[in-house]
Image 1: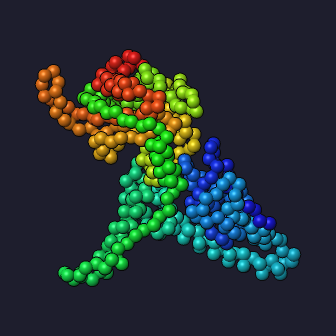
Image 2: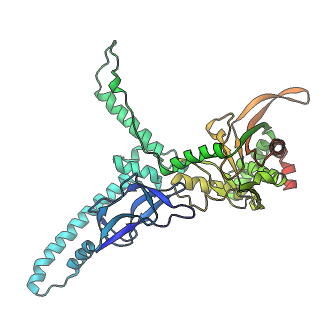
Length: 425
C-alpha cells in the first residue's frame, strides 16, 4: 500500500513553498517521524516527516519546484517495510527449519552490529551533532567534510554554513596549488576559463527581494538622520556590566537602551507605531519591536512581544535567544509576524551611515550605526566623543516630516540622558 507524502499546513498566511532538499531518495527506508524532505517558505523552513514507515517508492516533486498545501511530494511503500518485519518475526514450523534460519539470523545480526560503528563514525564525521547549524550540516553531508578540521565562528564555537564554504575554498585552493603548472609570463587567460556559478534563490531570498521592492513602490518612504553622543550610555554600561551579567547571566548591550528609547518615543508619536489598512489608520496600543538579525539565508526580523513590559535583562535575553534561533534556522512563524516597529543595527557590520528600508506594513524603522570617535563642539569647546549616526525611515503617507524629526530627536535625548528615559517610561 502506498502512502502519499503531502505538503502540510505551513502556518498562518502561508499557502505555498519550495522543495528545498530531499534527505531521502527513492528506495531508501524511512521510519515514522523521520524527516524526509525540507520545504522553504518565505518565513521559515518546514521539515516534512514520515507518518508511516516503509520505503520511498516515488519522488514526484523535485528540488526547486514550487508546491502548495496538499500537493503530493512523493509516496511511501508501507508493504515493503511490513514484509521485511513479517519475515523476521515469522515463527519456524519445525526444528530443522529453525536450525537453518538461526545461523542466517545471527549472521544478519552480526552484519548489523559490524555496520553500526561505521554509521556512528560517519555521523561523527559528517554532521557534528549540536556543533553545527542545519544549513552547515547539509554542506558537511554533501561534501563529506570532517568537522574536526573546521573552526566554528558561530555562537559558542558552532560551525556555520560560511565556515564550511570557507573551508572548502581553502581546501580546493590547496589542491589547485599542488597541481597547477607554472604560469608563462606572457600567457593571457582565455575567456572560456572565466567561471560562472548559478544558484537558485531560496524562497526566503525571493521573498526578501520582493518585499524590499514592494516597500519602495507602495510607501512614500523618506529618511531623516541625526547623531547621538553615546558617552553616557557607555559609562553606565562600563559601570554596571559586571554586576548586570552576574545577576542576570547576560551581557548588557546597547540594543536594550535603544528598544526602551524607541518605546518612549513611540508613545509620544503614536502614528509611527501605526499602520495603514485600506482607508484607515490603525493605531497600536502595544509595542512589538522587530529586531533585524542577519541569518545565513538572509535578513530576518524576529519580534519582541510586549517589549514595553520587558526589563533590560529580558530584552537582552530575548534578543540572544532569537538570534541563536535565526542562526540555527529554528525561528517560528509567530516569532516573525506582527511587529509594530523595527530596529536594525548596521553598525555591527561596520556601517557608518545607511538608509534602512521599511518592513511593511510597519511605517517606521530605526537604523543604528557604528560608534566612532569624532570631534564635536560642547560648551564652546572642541571635544572628542563616541558618536553614532542614527536614521529613521518612515512612511510619509501617515507620518509628517516634523514628527519624524522630533521622534529621532527624542531618541537622541533618551540615549544621551538615560535617567530621563527611566523616569518617563
